[in-house]
Amino acid sequence: MASQVSGIAASDGIAQAKAYLLVEPDLSFDKKTISDVESEVNRLQAAIDTAKEELANIRSIAAESLGEEEAQVFDAHAMVLSDPDLIDQTNTVIKDEKVNAEAALQQTSDNFITIFEAMEDNPYMQERAADIRDVRKRVMSHLLNVKLPTPATIDEEVIIIAEDLTPSDTAQLNKQYVKAFVTNVGGRTSHSAIMARSLEIPAIVGTNNITEMVSEGDFLVVDGMEGDVFINPSETTIETYNKKATEFAELKLEWDRLKDEKSVTKDGKHVELAANIGTPKDLTGVIDNGGEAIGLYRTEFLYMDSKELPTEDEQYTAYKAVLEGMDGKPVVVRTMDIGGDKELPYLELPKEMNPFLGYRAIRVSLDQDEVFRTQIRALLRASVHGTLRIMFPMIATLPEFRDAKAILEEEKANLVKDGIKVAEDIQVGIMIEIPAAAVLADQFAKEVDFFSIGTNDLIQYTMAADRMNERVSYLYQPYNPSILRLVKNVIDAAHKEGKWAGMCGEMAGDQIAVPLLVGLGLDEFSMSATSILKTRSLLTDLDTAEMKELSDKALNECTTAEEVVKLVEEYTSK
Ligand SMILES: C=C(OP(=O)(O)O)C(=O)O
Ligand SMILES: [Mg+2]
Image 1 (tube, rainbow, N blue to C red):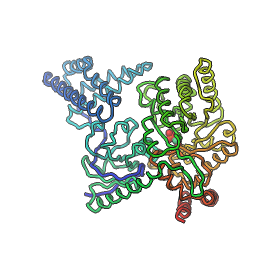
Image 2: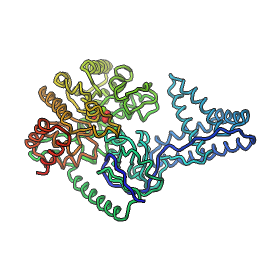
Image 3: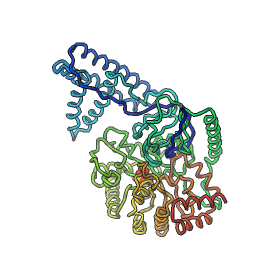
Image 4: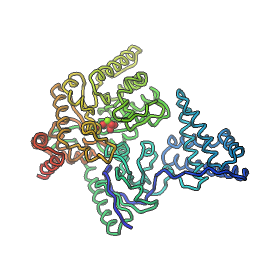
């Protein structure tokens, strides 16, 4: 039967394909006493053999569609399956305790996992514990005859349905086949949503119950602009959305014509339209979409994509590639922002009640000094290959900025002493994403070279509404006058000291927010590369004096976000 589910529109576009459920399968079993030990051992061996064949197959598909590097994780899994200790011990448990293969496998693998996880100073062995969990799941699925979803092997057009997608799940998705994704949880600024925009695939998050509503193989239509999913829709709905898809494609063609144009308002004021990236691979998207700069390079993905801390040389190579790729255009590199929803298995981050309010970003960097210094050295060495700007995340106090800057200066002096070239003119700025820093922006502006307003976090901290939690997403209000006043405070403070103010939160590419931000005098707008051209097109319709009048009214006369939206619509439809 046809039905419809709505959620938060997270990435533009229309997609149609059948559903692929990426959900945890039920692998529960009963522990049983068995009498025929021989056949139980054979049953385990058969499941292991099938898992091995399956892994080899997955590996070759992953290597072809995602690349050799992504495929290597399956080598580690194959190694676990060939480990005689694990298999022999499981067989011994079956024989000695006369229990079924499922129970024996669970017991033996639990032992190994406990031992490996306890090796706190050996991240390599801790990783092996994760591999054993994965492999156990696969063998168990064969013992129980349950299908295990494996996104890396998808080789036909699908729409992924999931509770949530971790950054590593998203990295495994092949854009050629994965036409869209829809999740139960998340918000517009959760990292899966940001990733969908950089992959340019439509996405809807925060639907609450899409995994319950959709069955494997259902035919779906996804409207990433409105946040609507249609399950087994009628012919009429399919036709309507075919038309909408064509219109969207035409609009994109129109925007494409602006690729090499400058970003100017109707009255000729230039603002910088920059892109947010997560890896050097995203550069193609930036260039294809006419980005004038990189306003935010989220370096934490370099750490998250690796099994251990990336070395100074590995980091240097990545930063150099981005600087050279931008060919002299500015590149703002943000130092590691781990924590919150971004985990790092090999850095021991404690489980916290409120990870977004805990040990993260600059707090980790200042605490784990050597990790931070390695990154800073890599950045300084790369600085000669382009126009580098360094930015510290999650700054709450001036002493944090001063400490981070002092480390940077120390490392710079050390490199120069060793005869290594470092650029002279590296601007050093901060993210403004904590209300305390937004309020004290006048004091910060005297010491930093620039601000970049991180509204993704600034909104959640100001409104006390978790950016990932769809139940409070109604409070996550970019247009709330309180947020606009904080933004104005930051921009004015920067300008008073002759500094520039940018924004790299998702609000910078939001078509309702852009007119307000033009009115507030924002200098640089950094967004998902896919939003650049539509923003450039929008700018050509905006007059700065009119937008100033609009933002004054929004800040001083509107009491709610809804009133602000109404006002913007009145002004932009004039
Ligand atoms: C850009 C931001 O940082 P992130 O989304 O990586 O937390 C922000 O908080 O607005
Ligand atoms: Mg942030």
